[in-house]
Image 1 (cartoon, one colour):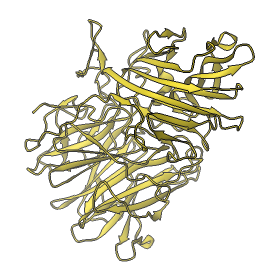
Image 2 (tube, helix red, strand yellow):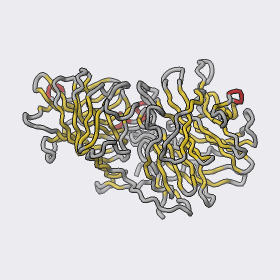
Image 3 (cartoon, helix red, strand yellow):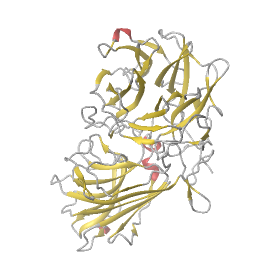
Image 4 (cartoon, helix red, strand yellow):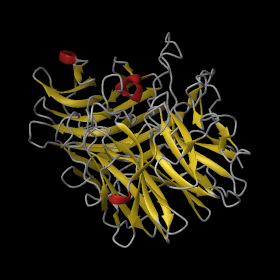
Length: 559
């Protein structure tokens, strides 16, 4: 069997919660403002992962209309007990400023593919909530605790609250702080495990940036402040492994194999640098967002968990001895001719599901009804998929007949409402229907072609758009026959679509770059656009010296 190659879930798959049921492993990941909520994968070998339907696929379970970017689903927790799956998830409504208004919910299912029960409201004490099933049958919600008071630290430790399975409600009178963290601060992402005589608490700290890390504490009780931090080295971090291909490891969860091996799934990132930049400051730009890595774990003589290879982890990891091969291709290329009446699993929408209010798919085309701009957090017609490789091409055929400049339809690269670019068909007073390229950078909008926008010839029924992403930069192309493409002379900096760029000016920075299809008509006339023959073709993880692309990673991010 081949090695586990990190990241195992490339492209925006943050905050993994991993479990095993019999011989099958499952990972649940954060989705933030993207719909449907919570991304699920399954595997039998920890190497290859199959995408499953998302559990939060209805507005009964999740309605994020108007949520801020990087609000929504933070750090879901998946567990299995009493013959069913338990999913705890947080819907965050406020991200900026002193407050983190949120609601934690619980839903259950006997089958990982659903149906999932109507949500049970738990509380709003703090985010990153997880459900611990003790061996005596009692259950507890474990969560980061938020303090809005400006004279206190906002990360107010890890709170434990008993959950009553008879009433399916929390017992707030039982709430207590079991761990206050270390001087590193920002303690969050707790997961609790009972192993032999100890309760082990795994928690993230240091913030979900390059100083991110995972710490472990343990206790023989669940009493107030009873947990002792591991006196040895920190469990997992890349803060001091600057040359590693994998960075930002920390927040995650522990899992054992049927034969008793141990693994830890963590968020991670793969930054790159512009030419001439110091490779250490800035550490780099993570355009694929926070991904998922898996590291092997052993237990030392004192009963503390350790990462094999040291606390920085490895790019290549020994797989479980008892795993069975899961047949899934590592690359994630996609061809969609829109023949189905439902969107493929790789597609996502923003905040709300894809319904007839946004458009329809089937019979060989996707129709989007023009609505708000790409800066709109309430009413937007856009479907998009993750960037999952540094090098890829994407292409689509578009039919659109605008009659004013407030109408636009085409291909977009999108991070959030303040950071995106767009190649689109629109209209201007000089030439009528034209092609324009625009970018929104920290909320500042720039048209690149302006009065030199490309005139669409009379009689041209369709326009084909293609984009070429080449890790540090990307470009757009157009064609009027689908065969001969012309490059638009605008080269865009991919770093603008990274967590690391967005965090410099904005508090919501938790997702990753997407490529998608959008129709805008903020004039309110709801002009429709038709899309055909979408392709997303990955070329590899990295560029080799001979100019080809490869899926093979490296232990060093500078190779």
